[in-house]
Image (tube, rainbow, N blue to C red; front, side, top):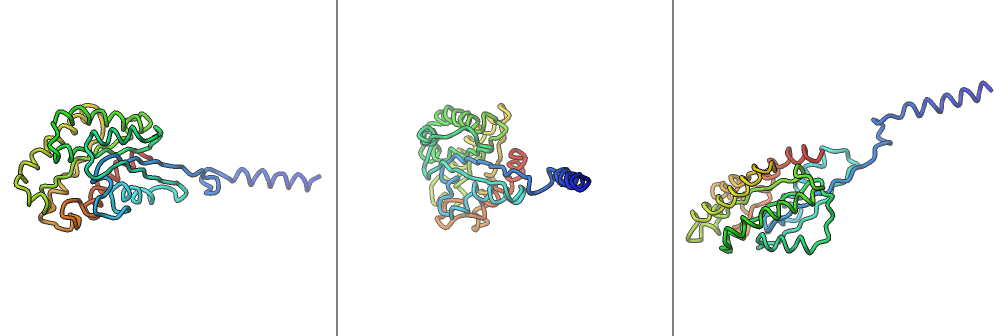
Length: 231
């Protein structure tokens, strides 16, 4: 009888020693990231793992338990305007369960000489959709400013590099003011791209888009904000 009592005590003691700090009791978490945009999001002219959403994911991984799972879905194509992105999102069967949604859009509205009023109408629509997809929580959304392609060989070969920069500023100012008014995170990376003429390694081999190094600098700014939102 005494022996059975001792065995029972040992079993109960072993259960009592299993705490939340015991790695064997940890339940892995899954984090879903959605990146919405155009060539700057899909990473035109750089490798798939070099684009900023993938670099951001890879930078987040070491900050979480190794058991956790991160996935990135990118809805973006080179040349997309706000209209194209709206149509693409509508064509997807997306769930509203993303822990983080990034939005970077507008350069092709400017490049294709679309009326600025179109951006004024469609950027807020896209932002509302991004919030909806981010579990309906605007705290889970990051808007990224539009890079300035005037500071690339392609932009310099155009006849209106200065006008490009002025118009990019107009687009970014509208997006930033809208975000500030609605308490949505806006991250400026435009200045990084404006160093392109002095630092050629910030420009991809196509002479137009950001390089993997430039995207890593984007991620340096995005990472602490994304980490704070996801954790």
